[in-house]
Amino acid sequence: MKIKLILLFAVSLMASCKCTKSSTSDKTASLEGTWQLDYISGPRIAFEGLYPNDKPSLVFDLKENKVSGKNSCNSYSGAVKLEGNTISFDQAGMITTKMFCDGEGEKIYMSTLNKINSYSVSNDGKTLNLLSGDISLMRFNKK
Image 1 (cartoon, helix red, strand yellow):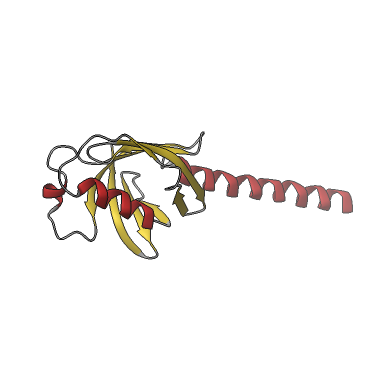
Image 2 (cartoon, rainbow, N blue to C red; image 1 turned 30 degrees about the horizontal axis):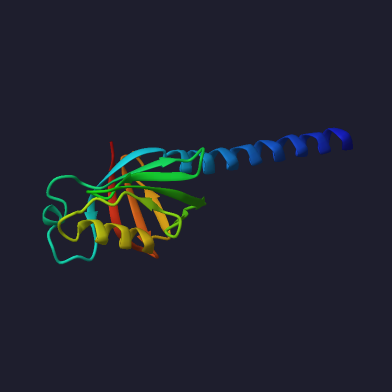
């Protein structure tokens, strides 16, 4: 009887561990792919004025713990660290191309990305909010 009880407990424990891992995995998996910026907090310039030709993008490759994209003018890539709903971008190791860009959009995008410490994804998986504390600083749509 005790052996059956212990076996039942062990099986239920393993099943619960598996569920927890898959939900965490599902959450980070929802980040995978390409996102396009449609809102950025802070600047006094209208969004369309900051990014008149090309909106910034963010591409997650979670198998490699990498992020890349365009900051409207130049391409960038670097490391990303995820743990639960916390996120950090390795700004010191971020590589960018160096084309000349008009306006302030590129600089504002990269400096705002540096302030991000958590994220949330909408239930339908189509909207990504990058947060500093509880405040949404950037919003992206899935492409």
